[in-house]
Image 1 (cartoon, helix red, strand yellow):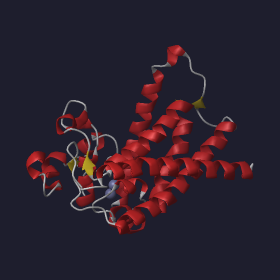
Image 2 (cartoon, helix red, strand yellow):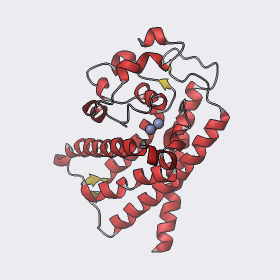
Image 3 (cartoon, rainbow, N blue to C red):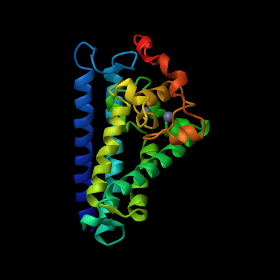
Length: 256
Ligand SMILES: [Zn+2]
Ligand SMILES: [Zn+2]
């Protein structure tokens, strides 16, 4: 039992870390290697990532990957004993439920993230829990999981909780984990990869992208969300429009 738990944890760690290195490495190569210019993305970071910051981000992202792996192994062990709502049967008539369940999970994650994130910005908690992440003043794709162990733990506990609460197809669960990594890398990439028109459009204006999250790395009192701007708007902590222009020293004209 214990040996199977350890094997599962090690296997999950390898998968989570590999996925992190693939996504972060790809966007780092795409946007930061070379002359620092791009015809299709808008630069948000004010300077090129330093190797010192990247090493910090990679180190804590690997620690976080280990903590997420333990949480994932707990879910798998509970699943084996029938203690979760994960399922593998797929009926054609129930296909509509797959996207619905994924949106519900993303909203639950976003809600948990928003409120735990705000709590970690309390002066009494910030140093111990959240300062590690904010060392990246101009974040890079490698900052995706750059969290202190306490912050990683606060995110990791949600996985077993969701697996118990929400009936979720295994394929949907795996897709969600990939979306989480992808979104976190994109939020920290230091460039806005989505067109300005789309970000401000009917759909895009409700979602969080690098432009929104980059503001938070400069101004700690706004933009706490992860995927959706819902909680930021409800709690009046959304500052996309008011603080958007100062994000880039060079692209102010196009950003305004
Ligand atoms: Zn961040
Ligand atoms: Zn923060």
